[in-house]
Length: 355
Image (cartoon, rainbow, N blue to C red):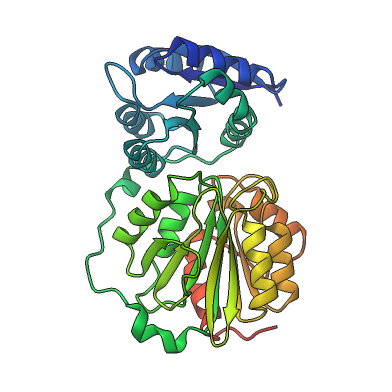
């Protein structure tokens, strides 16, 4: 395997220099060029044929989002977005992932040099993951219909809150995988809890986007929220999420704690709490993502009698987390993304016999 060839696209000369230095500090990566705007980037993509593109959002002559849309329609390739942490930036980044970007890194707003040093490892890891990602034209994904029908409320669902819970973990490629999965859930689906590797400030925007497209209610989890049928709770960025039980009801604990498996929120934290609190009364699902977060937790869920599912390699953007979970022997079914919702719902409704 040769080095991963990267083209860095950013209107800031300082940012181009910093990203280049960070990437080239890794012996497996070579920055083959830089571009200050999408028009220069287009020419360099054609001339240099990079493996991965890092792309700024706000640039002159054409914004990064418009360029990404054209790129993914004509010449799909792995793209890692660089985004500032603003409300507008959150929405733009969500749209970029919908259009086919593999992942994103949040730029520091203050003290850029020190801030970039702090996220250097993240940039390198995400570029490496993107280099092996499966990228497809994303036009079909950009036209989803919003769901505006009635949704369940908490009061009429409370009496069934001890039905099985669906716990889901995802990382790279997970924003669109979760969208495809959750849009298949009916309005009375079993309660679900989700961890996706996403920084603080982005999870609320992402939860709102999911809620607009799904029949179930989706919200960023708050400490003490009950897990109820027809509701999905998404772990907030920079906080850990665990399930807990009080009498006949399940709820979530949202708390500040060190990273686990290098992540906060961590899929392992969620899954291990499910193993301890829910046992066989839970279904575990691990989706596309780099690294091994969730593998240990899913194995423990499996050992405690939970039904467990991993997304298959063919439909993963990055087959890291599911691969590690499968290798640990903690997976009952390996399924393509389009089948996971059906099997998870059947298992949660006890239509699949427990082991």
